[in-house]
Image (tube, rainbow, N blue to C red; front, side, top):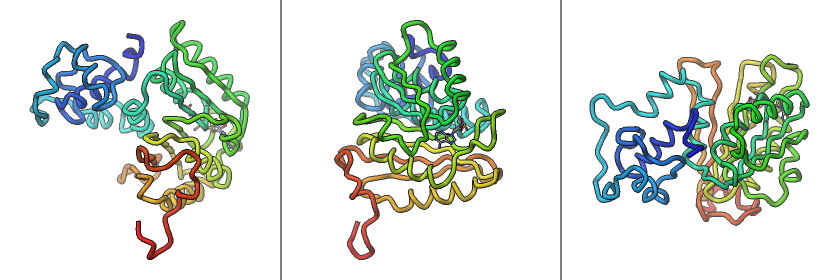
Length: 286
Ligand SMILES: C[S@@+](CC[C@H](N)C(=O)[O-])C[C@H]1O[C@@H](n2cnc3c(N)ncnc32)[C@H](O)[C@@H]1O
């Protein structure tokens, strides 16, 4: 199965293992399991393809000695890069045929990961303000995606604050932001607090219930700390009745990128119900 290949084969197997109750965060027992399996819904499919039809009846067992968890894979094999953590989260959420948006196309690494996950029946929008970034993204996708496996691709030169206008009425399962500037590109073309916040506002509108918004933020360049503060302020305001927000950072590497995650609770908010986003006034109850 084409989506089982590449960087995500292992983590999707871990997702299958999790769905089967084999080992949370672990890949024990996942050998031969099917790709791109979200927990629960695809547990049966995972079990069938793994030749473990009775696994659903088995109670979950804790990881044992010698098990490698996905978390340890992240810390060790992936060099504790939180960009990898974001991609691992997408792999837990995206299903073949889904729609995903990369709000900062850059060199196309994230767009490629999203494209692999949604597969040929899916759709990927990738936005960037630079032609060079869009060209780089196109080249990467053309080089890396096997013939016939590419989703419907929309590479758009636009500021991501226009995200809603660009994607139209599309409901996305994942929207990804990787802020900052194009590595080895023009560092003056950098994401900025004001447009980033506008773009995140738009992203919250297009995100479907059960969808995931991820933001990689960098504080080491001029304007980076201010942008991160603005992003965090926006996320802090979101009503916990409708949104789960979280932040992951490497506390012993204070200048390392920070991963912020927003989960739109399943079924909690009708699409476009922007008015329900904000934390209610004090005393109104949550
Ligand atoms: C860190 S790079 C993105 C990395 C990329 N996701 C990847 O996988 O290679 C940040 C990108 O954001 C782009 N960018 C800056 N301001 C933007 C804006 N207002 N709207 C959309 N993209 C923007 C830059 O041109 C740059 O290519």
